[in-house]
Image 1 (cartoon, rainbow, N blue to C red):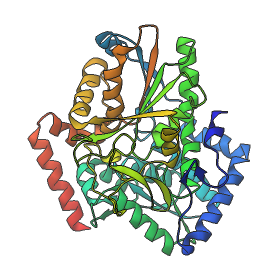
Image 2: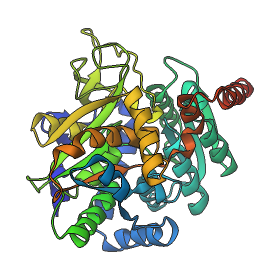
Image 3: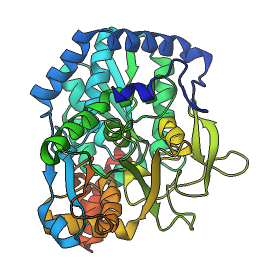
Length: 417
C-alpha cells in the first residue's frame, strides 16, 4: 500500500515534522497517538469510517473527463477528481469525520477546529451535528470577511464561530487560539486539526483519512484509461488535499506529482503564500512542528497573501516538505490573476464552479496540458466547489454590489461577537 511511504514511528519525515509542544499538552497528544494507533490496527474502525463516507458523504466522488477543456487546450486528456461533490462541497469532511470517530472513541464530547477558507469549519460543524458533539470553530477575522457564507452555515449547524482579531487575522492566528482552548479543556475536548500540519500525529493522521481520494482516483483512472496518468495536480495550502490524492501515486515514479501554491501578486513580491516554490521560506519550528515557514532571518513569521483564504498559511505539511527535498513532488505557484482566469475557464468550458484554492491547480494544469501528447492523461484534484467564494469571485468579475453587501454583513458579524 502506498501509504507506507508516509508512516512514521517518531513523527519525522526526513528532517521535518516532530512534536514540539508545551508540557501541558503532553497528555492530550499521548492519548491521541494511542487512540490513532489503536484505530489503525482495528479493521472495524476503517469499515465504520468508510460506511459513513459512503452513506453520508457521497463517496466515492467521480473522476470526470473534461472533454471540452481537453479539446480547447489540446494535448493531454484532462480528468477532474470531483471532491467538490463530496458532502459539504470539499475534501475536508473526509478528515473531519475520521477525527470525529476518534473523538468518540476517546470519550470526548466537544470538538474545536480552526478554519481558513471555512470548508474545514463547515465540515467540523457537520460532523459534530452528525455525531452529537459540541463544536467551536476559530476563524481569522479577515477570513470571516472573505468567507462569510461558510460562517452562516457553521452557525446554522450548531457550531459557535469565534472570529480571531489578533495578528494578521488569518489561519495562523486561528490555529493559535484553538491550541489555547485545547490547553484549558483537554478533559472533554478533541482538537480536529484540518490539514496535514502540526505536531505528530496530525500530519500522518490527516493524510491517512484523506488517502481515500488517492485510492479512488488511482482505481478510476485505471478503469477509464487502462494506465496511470502522466501527472497529478493539486493545490497546496497546509497540504491535506494534495497529500490525499498524491498518496495514491507516490510509488509510481513515472507519475509526476505537482503541488501548486498561492503565488499571490508574484513570488518575487512580498505578497504571496508560497513556501516550497519561492525563496522566502526556510526550515523552522513553529506551532509544534518543523517545516518550511515564510519567515525572516530572525525566525519571525511574515505576512502572506493569496486570493484564496485556504492557501495563505505560513507553513506547509512536513510530509510535503520532505517530498519536495527528496524530489518526489514538484512545486509551483499560480498568481491571483491566473487563478481568476482558471475559474472563468472551467466555468465556461465544463460548467463546473471551482473553489479559488482548487483553481490554483487548474491554472497550472491549463498551462501544462498542451505540452503532453494526446495519448496521455492528467488528473486535477478539484478539492472544493466555488460557491463559498461567490463574493470573491464576484469581485473578480467586477460585481461591486455583491462585494459591498458581503463586506458589510461580515463586519456586522465580527462587531457583534
